Length: 102
Image (cartoon, rainbow, N blue to C red; front, side, top):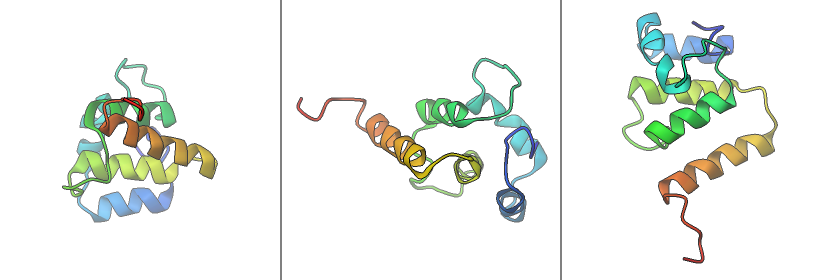
């Protein structure tokens, strides 16, 4: 499951140390792969998660799916700008994608 989620060794260890099991990882794949492609989880999978569950940094932060989403985010091999875009997407999702001028 570590490879499927593309988790770094450090993030995977944090999940396991925090009580997230292989079964939890398996059972939450559909939040990141809504079409069942069985492809490794990428930043697109994180967007799928955000569309379904929202902000993975908001309380309660100890939910297993939120822990997994944070680990995926932290493991993404993308630029800081791309990570900022994901965080902005979360903010837009919280605001129901309403234009600020509305």
